[in-house]
Length: 105
Image (cartoon, rainbow, N blue to C red; front, side):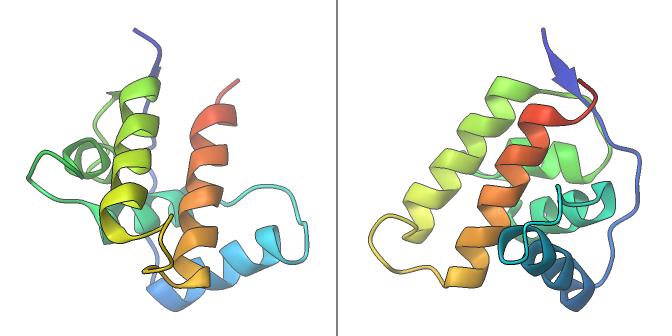
């Protein structure tokens, strides 16, 4: 299993979205681990969609592919593809996906 685990604590939402904007709009590298935890916590759920995000947000080791699948299902469920999600939320989930792919490699 290809796991990812971040022990960082989350930050406030405004700071997380400022980090996302710096990355997605200004092109400054990747989001910080604290931002990744915050984004995951914002979209976590105990249900079928969001439970891997919850594990990641709590600092548990999770499978990278399962986490990426959970992010994709969150996008699909929350209207990412149909315009039901804000541009800032789309950017945040995109940055989280990139973080998951590259972190620790």
